[in-house]
Amino acid sequence: MEKTGCIKAIIIAALIPWVLYGIICLPGLFAKGQYECRYTYGPLEGARLTLQNDSEAKIRIYSTEVVGGYADKLKGQYSFINDSVLIVHWNKVNKHNTYYTEPYIDTLTIRGENFVRTKSN
Image (cartoon, rainbow, N blue to C red):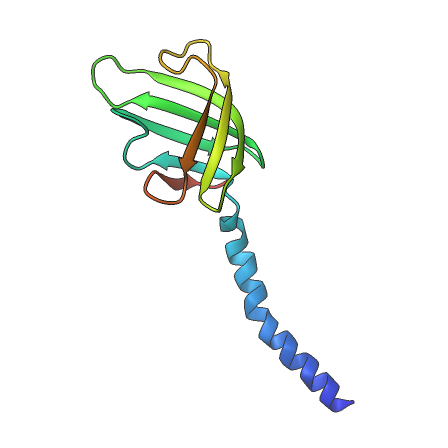
């Protein structure tokens, strides 16, 4: 009986680091949060993307030009292709948008060159 208790204690002791790692890293595995474009969203454009919950996304695409600036807002539904690439169906367009006036489908890389996390929910 003592061997069984010892084996259980060893197994539990071996699992503790994995559980702690999961608790610390699990929130990072889910993409919810705010991301900001590091370089450009498009020619002379930047973007701030917010993943609201498990499927809703918001984005503010803004001009990086000094003259003729704009800031268009869109809302939509997203789904992941893998851990860093998502497909977004931008289906709600702000009525005051200048350039992004129609719904469209977008592919974004949020963990990589295009977007970096600035704040998590």
